[in-house]
Image 1 (cartoon, rainbow, N blue to C red):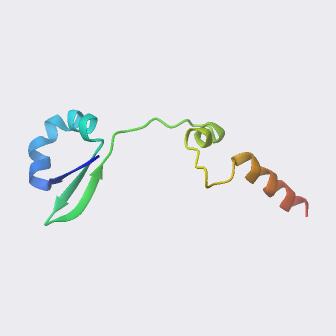
Image 2: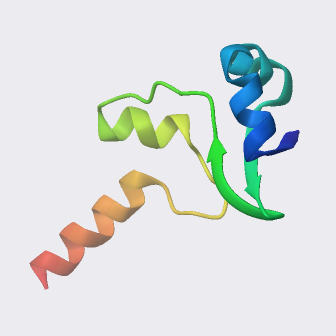
Length: 77
């Protein structure tokens, strides 16, 4: 769940930002009631494209192997 903080509150809470991210998941910083920026915890992603694709599977998107097959088929045509 996101936590919204004013820029002033964020500056005051900055020493505790790691604890806040663990608790809230993300912090959205506001300035004059408008989003200024978002703070997210760092996630390590695999460097290999196939490993990255398997780590972020989306049921609405075709498999990477299927995309590769289509590209090879189009190159042969």
